[in-house]
Structure formats: C-alpha cells, structure tokens
Length: 531
Image (cartoon, rainbow, N blue to C red; front, side, top):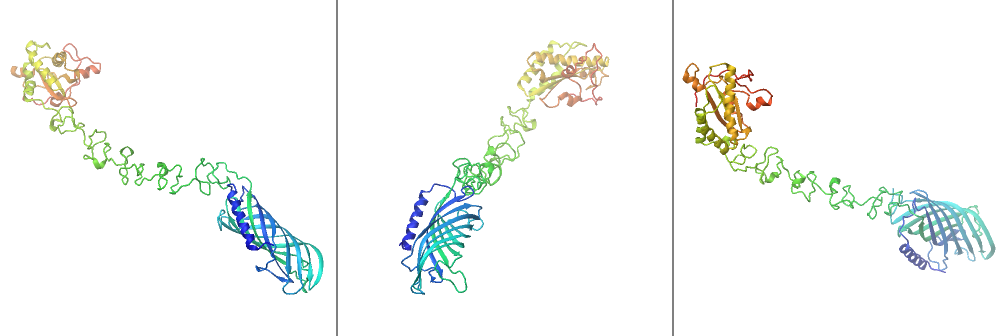
C-alpha cells in the first residue's frame, strides 16, 4: 500500500525533474500536436454497498496508473484517448460481511475544452484549467461477498460515460503537471454484485489522477526566434533579436521602431530618426538639437536661421540680411574695407568710400578740376581729328587720374559747331573722341573703362551764330563715373551709341567720308552754361 501524501510528494518531485530536463519547445499547439501523459491515480467507489467518495481516512488506499494520448485540434479543443488500471478493494460500513475486490480498467475517448485558448486565458498561462467529457469501455473482474455470502469472479465488459475537470500547471514550454478528477458511470451493477430494486445503475467511480504531460513534435520556426511560424506575426526577424510572444522584435518604448534598430530604445521617438525623439519635428534628434523646441536646420544643429545666412537667429545681430549675401560670424553683411557700406551694396568693396558715393572713394577736387578743364586743353588740327602735341600733357594727367581711381570709368564725348554738313560734323565728333580714347588706351588704360561717342553739332553749349560761340561748341568732354553706373555723357546729353556699341553691331563708325548716320540723339536742349 502507498499512502496518498507519499504518492503526491513523489509525483511532484518527478514533475520538477522532467521540467528541468525538457528541451525548449512550444506547448501542445498546431506545431506540436501530440502530447503523452503518464498518470498515477486513486479510485473511489459509490454504489449499493456504500460510498467512499472524497474519503481520505482509509489506510488501505490502492494506487493505479494510466496514460493519455492527446491530439491538438484548435486553441480551444483537443481530443484524447485515456486509459487507466487499478486493483480496487472496498469494505462496506453499512452491511457487515459485504466487500469486493475488482481489477478495473477503463479505456475512453474524450473531447477536451481548454480555457487557455487566448480568449479566456493566455495560451501560455501558468495555470490552465480544462474540462473533458466522453465515453468508452469499463472492464473489470470482480469478486467478493455480500452479507457474508461470497460470489465468484465476475467478468464485466460494459460501456461507460465520464466527465472530467483538470488543472494543468506549465512547468516549461514542453512539460506540464496535470491534476484531474473524473467521474465514471459504467452501465453495470455487477461490480459490487448488488442490484437496486428500481433497476437503477448505482455503481460509479471517482478517479483522482496526477501526471506529467510532455508535448511531442517539432516546431516550425524559420527565423529561429522561438515562436512557431504559424503564430509568428513577424516571420523575418533577424537571428539573435529578442521577440515578444507574437514573434515580433521587442519595442520597449512603443514607438514602432524595434529595439534592435532603435538608437533610443527607452524613449519614444520617430522611425525616420531610428527611434529617437524630435520634439520640434525638424528632423534633428533632441540629443543633437541645440534648439530642441524650435524647428531649425540640420546643418545648424537644429537651430533656426530665418534669413538663411548660416548664422542661427539667436546669434544673428543682423537678422534680415538679404538672401545670398555673405556675412560675418554675427550674421551681419561683410564690409571688407570697413567703410560702413556692406560689400553687397558697395561698388568698391576693397576701397573705403562714403555711402553717398556707394562706398567708393570720391575723386579729389584737384582731379575733378583737371577733368572739368580738360576740354580747354585738348586741341585738334583744323577740320581734323589729329591731336595737337599741346594736348598730350593734359591727356597724361587724365591717364594718371584713371590709374589713381580704378573704380571709375571715363566718358569721352565729341562735339562740333554747326558749320558744315551734319554728317560731316557727326563723323568728326566721333573721330576726335576716338583719338583721345586711343591715346589713353595706348597708355595702358583698359578699353572697357573708356567709352567714346560723338554728338556732332546736336549739343551746343554756346550760340553758333558767333565765332566765340562756335569755338566753345568745338570740344571734347571728359566725365568720370563709377563703373557700372549710367554713362556720364548720357546723363548730360542723352543717348548716343558708343564706338564699341557701333562695332558690336557690325556697322561702320561714322566718319567724315561715309554717310552712315547713327541713331539720332534726342531733340536739342537749351544751351547749357559750361562748367
């Protein structure tokens, strides 16, 4: 005989040993559909001789054994084949001299309802309740006595039905401890050899079992993450990546970026920044953002730069600099010559000058006087464009002025009196202006800094009716202007093509010998007092 306490202790120890030794595998599932159980059990009888249901005081408790084969059907249902055998003895306390001994076997087919189906409890819950019901065969050889009168061995082969309630304890992914109680109702009265006057079948049995269940089979797990392919919602997980029960990579901060790809796994962030946070949404992670609460530019460590000059707003002392202007470290436009006129507005960024002259040095009074009086000293042979030698000193002075003021250009405009034909006078004015220009070019002044044009007799400064007036009208004007500004002759006299412009069109420059007349100048203005 084995007492129930010793039985349970031995069963528990065996369960623990099996749980530690079992390989890692998923429980009985669609991948591992078959499970085997080995059980130790105790039968209890209730019938016409009496009952020992739930009676734990007897010292002659016998022990039986059984096994179960279970097949997975779905998360909620399994089908099982159950077998059990025990030699059972019962002595009646109601009627002296009544007892029996039976060698009992039961083979049943049952349908199991699992409560750990993912709807009531998780499939991998530690405690997994279940219910089972079914039918099978009750097999027994029974002998004994009734009221002191013995009866021989009786063979019993009868159908039975049963109901079972069980608790399964998950010891590992593949090994379980099962505790069950089932009631079996065989369709017979012959176990105790007593019949009821009402012909009712009273022989019933309780079966209490404890057992170890091991799930068999091989789980399909292509990505080797420990979650079967049928349950794996993320089947392509890289090797070695920790996953959740659904086979998806862990994401501790819940930002949608798995931990193995998340550079900030403990703080919720955005996928575009590999899981790192970006409060101001400027594409720069907060950890790298010098202005984390204000949208800015990546190249400026996430700080704003409203005028796009490369200096962040908080350091920009000139925040409204026009686009494309070069600035210093304070965000202010560069001023190389330090004259207070920024380079982008300074016509002479490398030479200091007042803002009134667009940042360029002003021509000194002495030089202006030379230019203004030059017309008096530039002389030509009569009716010719040949410079007289007396003109050279003054022209040389003008060459020096052009060298001293490299940011200026010079306008040379030729004029005649009204004597002679208009075309002759126009050609003569061009030739004389060009003669003065050619001299200065020969002294090294760049051609693009001197423009020559002729106005003929159209722009008199005195009355042509007198010889004195005609003398004043026969002149060549020399007017400086900042390179890039409007030509000084056009400002004074209006439009007239320069020699360069005429040549660019492929037309001949007016001369006294040809009849080509350039674009007519505007109508004559009132004579101007010569400065």
